[in-house]
Image (cartoon, rainbow, N blue to C red):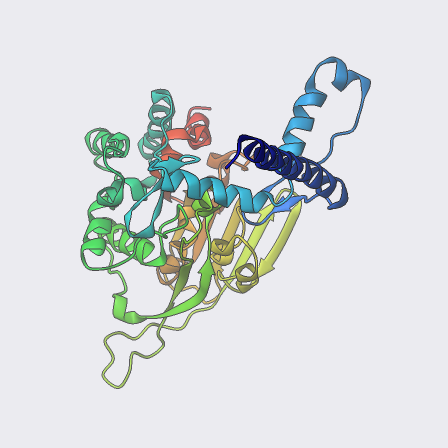
Length: 400
């Protein structure tokens, strides 16, 4: 090829690249102006930044430009596709994680363990022990996360012992109140159970059942055997919180399963479950509402399908049996791990009061006395117990 011909071809190629580059810039710019802003991203399960109002004060203190930067990032055209493309590129480049979520084996997404100042866990443990010392019947159930129970699925050198250290500390400092569920979860895994979702940070209903058996053993009560339940798949397209943070293409959706007590286990029944009815009351400030089931199927049509169990987080939820039979009441301080755990407790208690201390504004000790409740369960996942300062709230009221 002559030098003059090469120069012509080279020049044409450079012009083509420049045109393509300009088309991309102006194309995305035009799309950003034409396409309506999105208030919520179902894929990321979060609210997006909307266009900030232009005010002199926000311009002078530089917050306007910061908000504009967030707005442009959140409202970038085809953002969901770019988020997934970023996760795919990081996966293909050999990186171990994206947005604090590990690329694990067997197509699991596993969240990195939380690390928090030591005083948070110490304060939370002191709160639990203060209630026990005050004469309440207290149990502490701290579930390890998938990064601990499924550590063999993590990338090489990714495992950190932060949750194992927490479990050992609880065994050393609170043996009388501790419900140890780690061993039960590992036994369930060894038996072929899926105890954590692949795309979400929660345990599955099978994982919650394993913990329920350990809690019943700790109480000295008899748990309903697995054969007493009919297991039903209520969703086959669940993408949870970890996928919202990571969005790796090719991640399979999870199934959500619910366990319903059998009224009759067949001609040769292994177990007969007594009939019972209950009502569920939600209290959020001045707002209260009631439903007749701990299951809310309408959430299966939304992004947060895990809310099928007991609905959204609420400061106070009260479940009452209408055919009181046990004479027992329970107050459960909890995070969302309790939501698929609670249905297993229904045959054992007449009333279950669930308090989410992140949103609770009342005196929990006064509430316990008002409701004449002596039995308490703290149920949290390990990340929450290490980082949620609100768990120390009940203990702060004991000495008031």
